[in-house]
Length: 102
Image 1 (tube, one colour):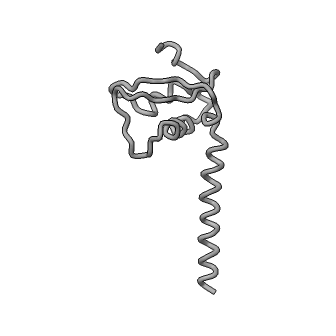
Image 2 (cartoon, one colour):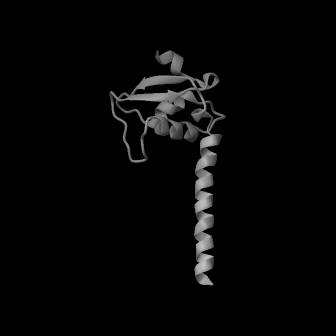
Image 3 (cartoon, one colour):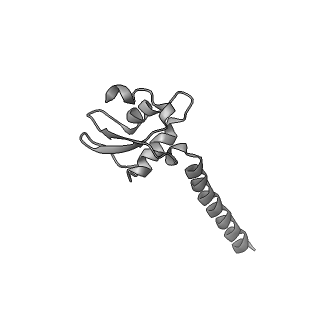
């Protein structure tokens, strides 16, 4: 009986983990855009500071940071460095400062 319950527990956890990842992908508007900004990383930049230029106060910056990591094939341990080029997904109405930098 314990093995059956343990098996169901593992199955349920697997389904939850898979559905969480899929829900995040579908709920992240930055993964659905077709407009991108190419950014040169400068000394002192982080994914957070770069992403903050492309979101409004009503948006969750974590979604953009996650999309930047995904699009640029960065994992959680990857550090960005000066001179690196990043592809930033842009929702046109959300740009705060990007136009001033160009």
